[in-house]
Every structure is written in structure tokens, then in C-alpha cells.
Image 1 (cartoon, helix red, strand yellow):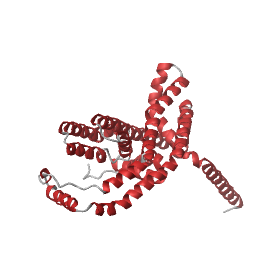
Image 2 (cartoon, helix red, strand yellow):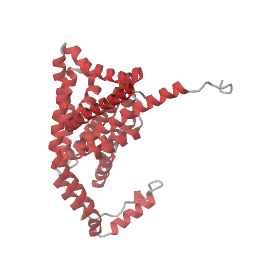
Image 3 (cartoon, one colour):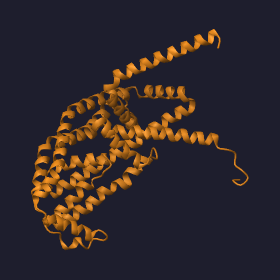
Image 4 (tube, one colour):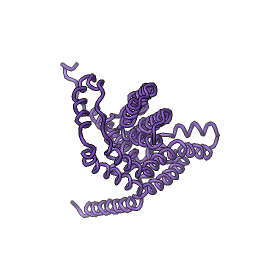
Length: 361
């Protein structure tokens, strides 16, 4: 290696080190704003067609941005804030209700339990053992779990204020991205093309489609399920209907579904002797729970074909890593990574496939 090559190598190393240091410093400075920025990007990408539709109606970009920000506050921010706020506000009542449940005496199982196919005998046996046990035994077994749930709810109360700050930042970033969406999209495409030529730009477009698919499939389905489930709970007169609706919204976002709330509610109605309301609510609950099976796949596959396991892992991992806001960020990041990796693998497989042999022909 001659002297000129050595100088060029040293120069390149210094340039790379300087750029890396600048990127690391920039990341460190922007780190508190990254969750809100990622969330705002997801919202803008998912609702961009709606913005263009509103813009065609009002003939003004600024007016369209004001309208769509108002819609976001009305349809998403307020319901989600109320859901989390309701859960946090009722943390003491949840803890007290749990303590009351530990003192209740479980009644003997009804005769129809044994007639349930496959699991009837074992269910009746376990139910009978629970009915014969003393209430104090349940208290000892359930008290640690009740304390953990109450402690988690109290901990979330401390992060509720920070979540509201994230909401505010998200709305500000969303408004800026709405106003300069074309410039941001062009810059992203240029950067992707600079990194990987035409395939990089195609990957950026695929990433945008996967973001839109997750937003429409997960969030819209969860919102529709929680609204319909809340209406059913309110009609049949279930206590703490607003709290249960908030829990349903969180459970549907987390891909668990509304079953853990709706099924016990239907059983409670039958237990009270309200056969008519119990049957009607059971039919309504089946419809609400089945929305996962037809509404979410349709919305997701309109823009991207993403496996459900990927969405579930993104929701749980995002919740653990980022807190409540990670319910949305987690599946989006995994969906984008999965889409880009799949496109890269498929592209390489297409390029490197060997010529077909005589047998294959």
C-alpha cells in the first residue's frame, strides 16, 4: 500500500468516525422525542389518504391538517386517554373488588356443567372442589396476585402524565409531517435510494404499506370492538361498564381480545337469572369477539400480508420495552422489519436462482 492509499484510508476512517459520532450525539439528543416521532410517523402514513381526501374537499392544506388533527383527538387520543385514565382512577376499586372476591363462597356447580363436551367432567370436578374449599384458602392464594395488579396500576399512574406529554408531542409532530408530507416522503425515498438504489426505494414504499396495514388492522379493529362491547355492557347494566370498556380496549390492542371480559359478563347475567339479557348479550359478545377473525385480516391484507404472530409479539414486546405507547410502536417496528427483510430475501432469491435443469423443465 503506497502513501496516497494510506492517507485516503486514514481520511475515510476519520470521516466515518466523525459521522458516527455526530449520529450518536444526535440520537442521544433526540432520544426523548423518538417514541412520539415514531408514533406520529405511523399515524401520518396510515391516515395520509384521508388527509388528501379532506384537502380535496376544503381546498386548503392547512384547513385539512386542522380537520384531521381534530379527528385524531376526537377518535383516538380522547378514547385512549380516557381508557388509561379510567383504569388508573379505579385502581383502588379494583384492589378492593379483588379483596371482596377472595371472601366470597363459591356455589356448587349446576348440573349442565357436566354435559359440556370434552371438558364437562373435569370442569365440574374442579368447580366442586372450589365450592367445598373455605374462602380463606382463596384469599391466601389470590392475595399476592391482587397486590401485584394493584401495584402495576399505581405504577402506571405515575407514567400517565408522561404519556399525555407524548400525546401532545405526537400531535405536534403529526401536524408538521402533514404540512410537509411530500418533502418528508421524497427525502425518505432519496435516502433509501442512496443506500440501496432502486430496491431501497421499493423497500421504503413497502415499509409505508406495512405501517398502514398495522394501524388499520390493529387500532381500528380494537376501537370498533371496544365501542360495540361498551354499548353491550351499558345496555345490560353491568357495573363499572366504563372501566370494563377501557380494559377491553387495552386487551384488544394487546391482541388478547374481548373474551376475558365479555364471557364472564354473559355468565354473570345467567347467574343472576336474566335469561333473556344473557342470551342477547351472548349473541352480541360472539359477534364482537368474531371481529378479530374477519375485520382485522381484511384491513391488514389490504396493504400488507403480515402474520398474526408477528403483530402479537410486537404488541407484547413493545409494551415491555416502551410502556403503554409501545402497544402501537412495537408491532409497527416489527412489521416494517419483517417486510423489508422479506423483500430483500425474495429479491436475492430471484436474482440467484440457478437455471432450471432438464428435470425441472
